[in-house]
Length: 93
Image 1 (tube, rainbow, N blue to C red):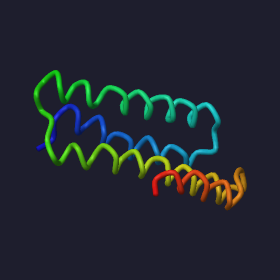
Image 2 (image 1 turned 90 degrees about the vertical axis):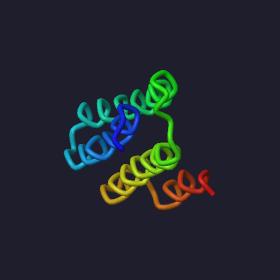
Image 3 (image 1 turned 135 degrees about the vertical axis):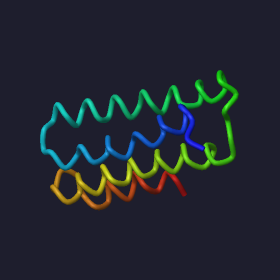
C-alpha cells in the first residue's frame, strides 16, 4: 500500500534521475529534497500510524539507491575517483 511516508521514500528515484542533467543547481536541489524527504517520511509514518514492514525496507533501500546512483553519475563524469566512491559505499557494509 502506498502511504504518504512510502511516497516520500519513492520520490527519491526521480530526484536521483535529475543527476542526468549536469546542472549544479538542479543537483543541489535534488540533494536537499532527498535529505528533506528522508527526514520527514518516518515522522509521517508515525504520525498517521502507517508504519509498515514494507516501509521499513523501502526507506533504506531508497536511501541507498539515491546515494549509489549519484555516486555512479559522479564517477562516470570523473568528478570523483573510484576509491572515493568505494569509500562512500563501504559505510553500508
